[in-house]
Image (cartoon, rainbow, N blue to C red; front, side):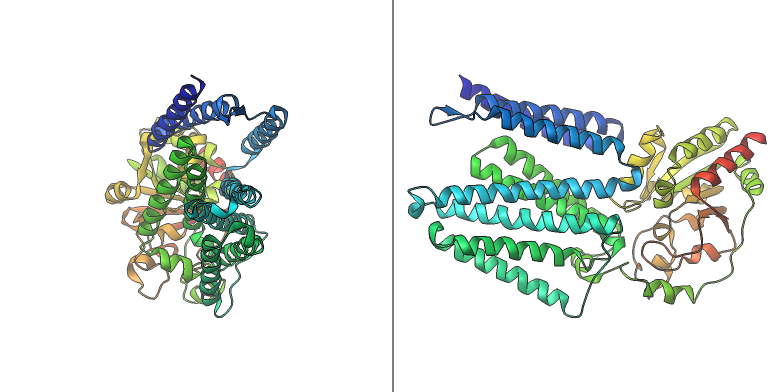
Length: 469
């Protein structure tokens, strides 16, 4: 009876994961989808703790189990509540790295169990294969995510040297060959080589992410997330745990699909992202700035007049909006313009910000209506009928060089075609290049005006001007 209840718990957990993931595809239901999946996970965890039996014995150690659950819950909740929207990608990388570490630790524990059991010599090689896969993928995900976390918070800089990609390939091949050696031989004879695989996988994970350019970090985060899912699925195979297997497969598949979609949004192959070091250095920006032009500034009062008497205004949010924590003021400006009869919408680029969906989450926090958020394809259809585009901290995703300059690193990348609108107002702190380190010729076009300053302060002043008209 208890076994049947445990199977039911796992079934409920698996179904809620699938339903929750489906709900995440729509911004209006995403928050509830998260809660549905979380409830399913809680049911599966409690079912395992109280109902799981092996050889007639239950888990026990309830004090340690619940102490760990309590510490993790409190720490995770506090971190999630306190994190600023600008630091959200860093937190995602950190949490994803912890998931990879857990998957790797499962492999370590199960391997040690095999070594110290009496029938280690007759162990199924399939189990060893799953252990090695979980170990390598989980360790690479952990090490890579920690480097990504450091690069996003500025404590780790891009690092590359001549021949690094060749060294990475050699490291990967050595890791796989040593893992194959471990699978073929008896567990009690390969313990040293097992931990050598751990070290090689850690080094490879670090070197794998270090040279990747800053502008490609959203793709890397998504890819590492899929790695963690696959590593967790390996744990599900080891324990014959259906809910762990389902959750891991869903995360792995979703992360892989998202990685492919983001590469498509940048018009680049995954191979190019991983070896191209795009946006990783300052030389591109320095070289591009030499070919700049003349820009013009707009006053707050002029910007307020143009926007207040427009029929349609499109707002393009970028990382600068998140840095300034100006999403709430932006929403207030939107409401003030709508009170004057102006139609206001938001144009969202798939790779705007520092992680997938960064701008959607940012605007959702300010209670911006989901119906006003237009994806790139829909937004591009409306720019020709838009009177004013207000760009808030976005740079590379509105750079026309992607369409007109074959020598540009972003050439071929689909962008928000803001230059099709009648007027373009760009809010930036300065004329420095964006995250990809290249100049934006949009800033020098006749229909473009620059509004310099911190996004929050600029929007507050612009809001005051609009209300006074």
